[in-house]
Length: 269
Image 1 (spheres, helix red, strand yellow):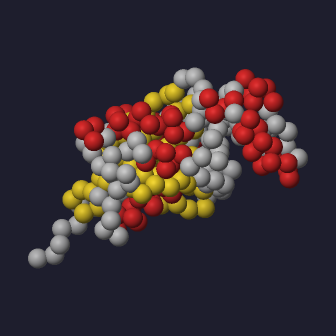
Image 2 (cartoon, rainbow, N blue to C red; image 1 turned 135 degrees about the horizontal axis):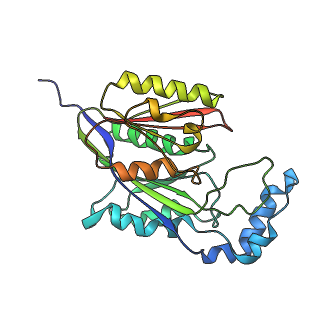
């Protein structure tokens, strides 16, 4: 008799906006680090944000959510922190600090510098780690804080608020989650590609679109489609997923990073 297929999938999620600021946003090391970072590119600092202490620490933001996401001390084997906008404690290993708040003292590391595709890359890593046999539960922490302490070289969408999402991925019978990522420079074409994938998955499949991707067309022609609210370019669609889990049917989650020209989709059976 063949062995039962078991895959890793996102089974639950917790999302929350975070008020206030972190003490680290007033630490002089933040200014020193940011100045060193942007000096080769001739970019000016946001002295106003540095003076007022704007911004939040990702480890502080997510620590409380871990308790809600893993009730009863459920242990995890892997923790991945994924982010797009810089942390206010750039020299501190936030993923390692978070692992101390996570039952099981999981292996922990961070993924960044891939725009909105970073969250999907983190899920791909979790699924690959599961296939090694060393991971039955993975926690993926997604975080964005609204302060950028230098002037960007090109216009970027900054978050409207500090926000964190914790995705709990667990081993379960059947097919696991599937992540696809592909080069797709044009946002309108990316949306058409997503709609084709959604139709191929069949009736009853929900479709969750990031706000920027949804802006390229009306989602009204696709049954079961929902678009994330604007203002949270990294966590928006994942906050929408948190509202839908646990769900009754399959889901397709899609995001497009227009700056990098990268389309990412997650299929949950």
